[in-house]
Amino acid sequence: MFTGIVTDLGTVREILPIGAGPGGAHDMRLVIGTSPAFLQDPAPAVIGASIACSGCCLTAVELGGDWFAVDASAESLSKTTLGLLKPGSRVNLERSLRLGDELGGHLVSGHVDGVAEVLSAVPENASVRWRFRLPKGLHRFVAPKGSIAIDGVSLTVNEVEGDVFGVNIIPHTAAVTTFGTLQPGSRVNIEIDTLARYVARLQDTAP
Image 1 (tube, helix red, strand yellow):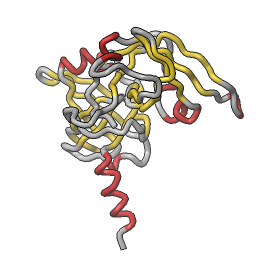
Image 2: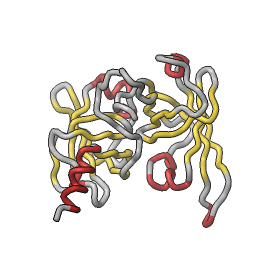
Image 3: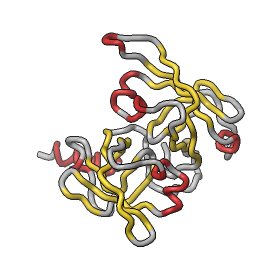
């Protein structure tokens, strides 16, 4: 589990295809550069550790002083923005929660529900109002003042109009996450609030 509070902005150093399946699909190993502190604090990362990479929970399979490697399956590549990454791409990073850690954002599983499209970014006072179009079927899980994770960043929804929703991004968030590199037309990973998922499920199964 994670909180959606990004603690480092990594950079993809290398992408290595792994295996090959039907239709040419393959898995992928990502080598991601990061700060040594990210891998040491609050405790040294180990092989097998879960690391959220732009909202995707992935397992560390190799570790260096200022880098780590993770494997992504063909399924993950097809259902998230991981398949769009290339060397030099920036990646939001977060280590997994430990019992007793501060829950600064909201509970995030790192299981991406879909990929949304950036529609616009408009300055609004000291922040920027970003608007996104959700993939089909997710709008029912998003509500004004509810929580949502965008590329692994915990945010509060401002408004929802059909399949379009908006959030405000303050300068600090833009500086320490990939929001500083997004633009209209970009794709982002979306994870809906777990509570919304179960409330909808209860409604669907109610007699």
